[in-house]
Image (cartoon, rainbow, N blue to C red; front, side, top):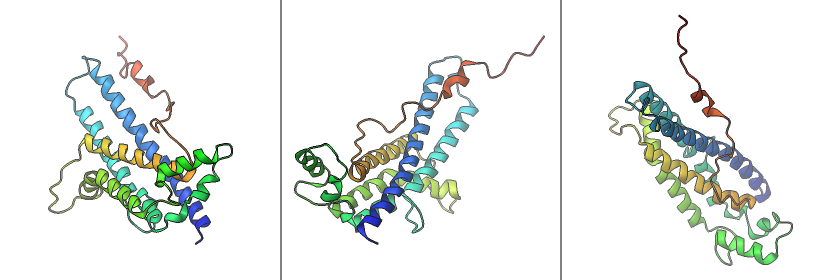
Length: 218
């Protein structure tokens, strides 16, 4: 496979990874906004089995989605597989290819931008840096992946790891987002300074502004 063909393949995979990471950010945002809604109303801010169930559903679904990004199966599309491929073929994005993403920027600004991504004077990313990113990904998602493997997908005999924490999930999502921003910049010259969370994700809070159980007619 030529570098051009590999670039197109990895760029298409990056679109899929982006969609999945954005979906994780959306679900994370809604979960914590729901906690704010509950916390702000003393009438409903009480221990409740329904809240426990919602948290369990959230932790389970998020863990499975995060595990998918560190799946090393050869037929999978995951962030792990993407980084492994970039590590094996760092020339997939060279200084020359990167410069083609710009139509109006000066040569000096393009040079400075690429230097900031791969290192001053380098023509492509150092494979050791990609390996570092891969290790970061595995580290952030490690406990979440273990929980998904040992407790969600199936119950492993002798498994001692209990449910993952909400903090573990947040750390994994934020780690995925940071890495995605970096590789969107490298592969597309797309600079995302804020969160990947969409500005508008629907009027999902509307259901909390009406009674869920209407009073029975007299």
